[in-house]
Image (cartoon, rainbow, N blue to C red; front, side):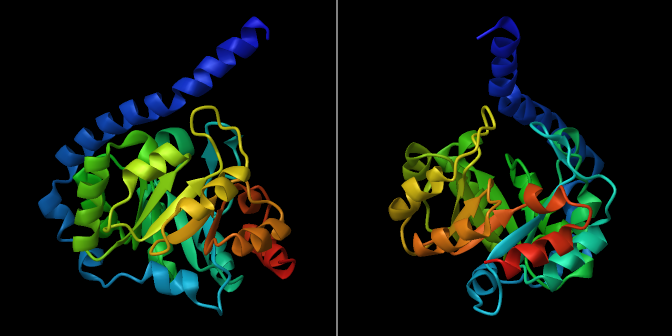
Length: 272
């Protein structure tokens, strides 16, 4: 391994720490700009959330959580020319069970208004894809129109997971816990969770292997929805994951890298 490869590996290993450090700064700035009392005045704050479980398990739908993502730290720009409206409408027409919308701007090019727009234009659950660290973000997710929040075990202590999940449930939202390995899974399960997602992408170095989903499938208790996330580019893999017990499949880059993500999803679904 040469010097450049070593340097690149260290940069990748540090990216999650950088994201968390930046996110803490953003949360404090947001808290000053829009206090919780103001968030609670949002029209979305009083709407009844769509049930994540009902939509994922609806046999008339695909089980796919289709993601709107402009860029990522590992891939750079994926697609920054399409609109939230056209992409999410296309996903819904293709049979998406839920939508996932990135709201992190610094590393993923997301915007909070993307979530607001996706909520306004569609009638299926919307997941706020974000690095959730603080109760403020949970309340904000509700105000933006989210039906589901993501809690990442790699950046949260068990007590934090339970606290944030309990708040989300109290606000009527569903909770998706994301894990990458058995250790994260075993220490992070709480009754307040609705679903467990296995991220096939290592957030430390961004390598991807669907084997992570197969390895953890039997260890996820049956009361939780089982979701496989990332690296799902072959329709045959969806069929295999269903056989292994998975209920949902989060797919973003595979669709977003195409000029027409909605059409790409339609073609993908037709091959399952």
